[in-house]
Image (cartoon, rainbow, N blue to C red):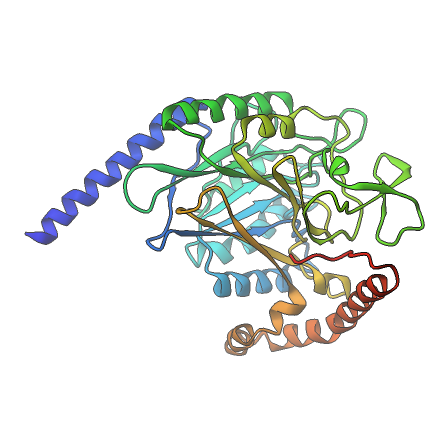
Length: 400
C-alpha cells in the first residue's frame, strides 16, 4: 500500500513539474530545454567544457582526459560552449562529435551545447546540421532555436527545487555567433537580447520573484575592457586591446578579480546590449565564456561576474598542460550565489583519485607525459607571478 501511495505521489509530482515546464516554455517560444532538479542534498554541479578543438591528432588524448574528469567530478550537467570539433568536412566533424559525445552518453550525463566562431566557419556545414549531430544522442538536452533567433543554440535550462514544483534556478545558453560582416568577432545579437529580457521578465511574473541564473556562451562580452584597467606597454601581464593595439589592459584593483589573465580578451566588435540588459534585469550572477584558450579568470563588474574558462583539450605541448576545465556548483538554499573552481590538467593528473582511475584504464602514459612537460610550464608561471609580486608588489594571479 505504501509503495502504491509513493508511486501515485511521484506521478503527481512529475506531472506538476511537467506542467510548470510547459508553462514557462510558453513564455519564451518553446526555447526551453529539458528541466532539471536540484539533488536531494540541494546541490547541482556543472562541468564547463569549451574549445576542445578536436582533430585527429588530439582527440584521443583530449577525450581520455574529459572522461577522467567526468568520473572524478560526477557532474549533473556538462555545458559545452563552442569550438568543439571544427573539422574540414561534415563526415570528419560527425566522427569527432561521436568520439566526444560517447564519453557522456556512456555515463548517462546530460549535455547542453552552444557554438563558437569556428564550429561552422568553413561553410561545409551549417550550425543546424551540427546541432542535429549532437541531438542524435539521448544525453543531449540542447535546443535548436530554428528561425526564432539569430544563430543556433540559444535557449534556457530550468532547474527546479529538489522537492516540490518551484523553479529555483535558471541557465541561459547563447549562441554568440562567429563573425560580423566586417570580419570582426560577433556577439549576442539584438533579437537574442530581447528574447532574454522578455523571457526573464515573464519568468519573474510567473514565479512572483526574480529567478537567479548563470549565462553560458562562447565569446566574452565587450564590457570586459571596462572591467579592466588601462596601462602602458611595459606593465607586466598587461595586454593590448584586441581592436586597438595602442591600448593595454590588466586587472583593476577597483574590482574583485579571480584567476589569471594570460592573453587579451576577444569580445565582439559591436555591442548589442546583452550585458546592460542583464545588469538591468538583475537575475544573472555570472556569464561564463570560452574562446580565449589560456584565460581562466573572472572580474566582478556591475554586480555580474565576467568569467572565462580554459580550453579543454590536450595537444601534447607545455601550454596545453595548463588547459583544463571549470566546475560550477549551485545550492538551492542559496540561489543568489554559486561556487566555481578551475582545474588544470597538470594539477588534475597529480590527484590520487585520478592516478587510481588511470591505472585501471591504462592511462598512465598520458598522465606521465602531462606531469613531465607540465612541471616546467607550471614552474615558469609560478616564478613569474612570484617575481612580479616581490619586485612590484602587484598581484597578477588571484585565487580561482
